[in-house]
Length: 283
Image (cartoon, rainbow, N blue to C red; front, side, top):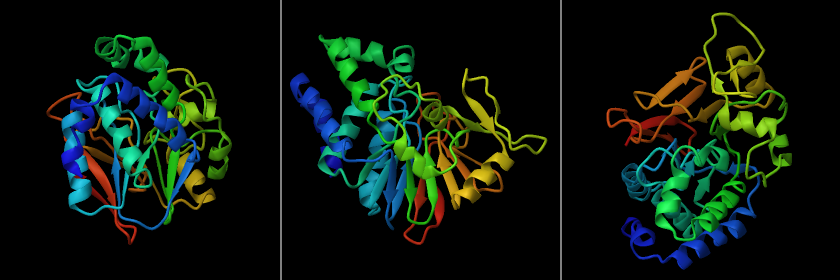
């Protein structure tokens, strides 16, 4: 399977790419906002941001080590050198093995953001009819699931737990057609960050990332996971020098899988065994 990796990059015409994008609408239309993953060996990938080289290594390791599920936590585009190529490869694998590839939405899968941070510029350079392609990509981004929950109660999402969501089943009631993210709960799921506060508080605090985006501390986190019977949370969204940072007595893992920011940043993936053990693996 890995030898097919560059097929979509090297041989696909613009019409084939547009057809691939349209195929995603049918495939993603069958998925819920909260994807349930039955018992399986799972690889979990953090932000990619156009890092095609790291994605190639991830795909190779996925097949070589006989993983069942490859779960991506979002932020496929912006910042990096190969953003269009990364998303096309991901769509390609999602099409040929849809039950084994899960693509969650990140905060950069939003036209307001990816028009500013590089994706629009790369689309404009690659496609003559760039407005059609830019609109088509972002329409599919609006259909991406928002989170995944494993058989053993590990919640995976891009950003963090949101204020105002009591039960994770309510994620399935959130809109899945907002090209520009407007729903406040979705925005927080894609943007919120954990923070080790000096004081104990259930409250969510302001985040310098922007309006409607919050920091959550350990007490708010514990309340949420206990209420929903969640054991661990795996998220991405933040560049981490060593590739992984844990919070709240190692109940929350924050992973990063892109070298697009710096070649000196370590990149990792998460690995969940069929027995439910979480490991962090360098890539």
